[in-house]
Image (tube, rainbow, N blue to C red; front, side):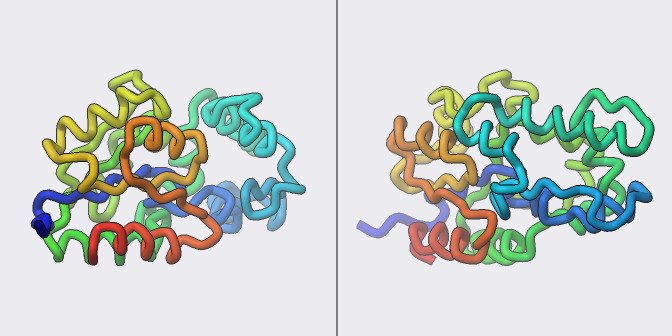
Length: 219
């Protein structure tokens, strides 16, 4: 039996999946902060050889929050300030222009899914923690999402199974009719553990990730 699109959902991580990563926007960050070009040399998944700290995170020696707090403190020092939270970094680097952060591929996929009647959800470990409430309110397309589950408030971090179960419960849909998209392998493993269909998003090939997710939803 064919499942109506209204009973399907695209569940997206926020940072890296909906937004461009901070690795991709070093130029914008340097200009916003008055830093010389090429001051920021760490490239994360775009060139792991430049970023031993990223490699440590991928090896699960540190958490994603640990990684970004270290970078936050480093960049704060470069401008002569003491930054103690990630949203300071994000807002100072590019928070005045949320449009710059949105992935074009994300915009296209979100609008296509919505037009097809697919429901939309965000499942994030740190949406407001990293970006701030005001940034989220001004973020393009945010009003199109039916459900937002943010561990800033729930305190339940992916890959804890309860995080996935919560977003599914709020959507009120069967998991087999949903597709979860995340760029972190550990979070994909969490989806696997609860039998939630998924796409491991490669930030270096965003169009491919969204195309795969939409195919799984039948659009």
